Image (cartoon, rainbow, N blue to C red; front, side, top):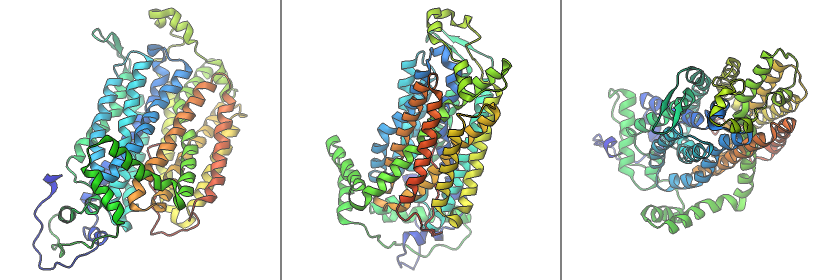
Length: 536
């Protein structure tokens, strides 16, 4: 950070201004756009790291001898890593700094991803994917606070929606990247590790590259100015503001005429606790401070708010991630059945008819490749096509929501999406036209739109000193929903497929009802709306 702090311009005017006003003075230019691009890429990196495994499962099942239950565990384990660490990262982000958390965790997530590409069995890859989730969690929610705190309240919505656009592009690129890498036909043996390195292993590494690139890019940016100012680093904060202004004006604008900032109101107890935490090296003391930072979210007026947003995120992720993890696999099964000449069947009947007997592969040992009819080294092109359509819908949908949220209100959006997606999930059970059923499946998965709306509600429901922790806790429950959802599908898909869709549909409808109880949900204040996008 020190390299980014430059000598302040001289000024005869020492009148202090509010930090929010100072950020407005910096204009909105290249500095903001670069930071938005990096932040959006980080959000996309989280998506690639957590959901990219869904394209690996169908083509790696013979290499790793994966049962459907093990696929469920493997698809959920990254989210388990996120759950186990999100509380820690949220606390450290609120007390030690946003960038201090984001950069190291991005490097470590990339390292864990590279190691996971060389694993040889279910347990090894499960452990490494857990660590991938553990570290990628550091940037998953913290990036919202980091990006938002470089902007005044008036511009924070625009900045976050800009990052959301970049995230949407990342969503679209995921199936294209998977298709371009996984469907290649090369392979080579690494004798030292006793593995056959196939395209799906390279795909894991490619999914981790954005984390590495973003970590290197953020080394050139300072800590959040609002965080620094809250810690009493006024001159460093002013230096960052002046640097932003010079970037955005190309050094051609008139010099800013302030050298001091008005102190913001902050509870003295909270300020003292932050200072004590920053100076503490004891693990026990840090755990105590984590509790003190978290406990207010579950007390008094915040308890109801925390409970509602956590339940909503759990319900959304249960379907948007839990059901998504098996989306390419199920599409591949439907395509396989259509290749056999079956034109009318339900999704679940297609699943039942294409089950793979892993026990047969285990009995075959090294001769598993002698069973090419059950060992898929490629995904059917339809799996990529429909995944591309889904991600395109997400990218466009986020843009539309950003345009209409102020006009129609958050409640209307939540109720509509929850209702339509929930009903679609139930209808899938009965539809016997595969293409139509796939389209309803696509609609079911778009419940992920609600993640951004609920995040926007969370940001407005909690004060600055609790905001990052509130987002982390709510997303922690969301990722728990991902773990539960993926394992429900893994356990039930081959034996009671219909129940998985019933669970998803009914839970989304229940979330729609719960949305009416979000505090202040009926308010439609354009200046307060901040729609943020989470890594699905």
